[in-house]
Length: 66
Image 1 (cartoon, rainbow, N blue to C red):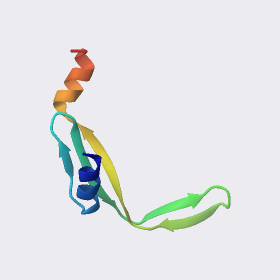
Image 2: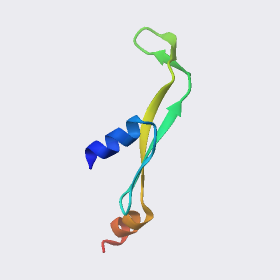
Image 3: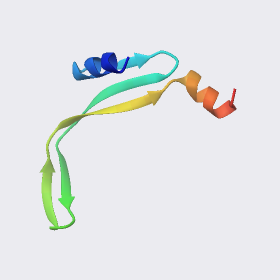
Image 4: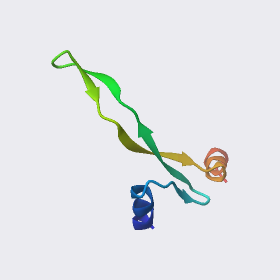
């Protein structure tokens, strides 16, 4: 199952696991950052990140201890 999720995310698609949640690929744009050690401003490159959204069904189960 993990391999399927990894392949799906690598291709840029979202991976839905019914009853558990959804792994979503998001694109981050250029971002200005600061290196606190050198006190220098820097431009971070665009990148992709994966976020997870828990399913409503699982969220209810966690909150009600069913």
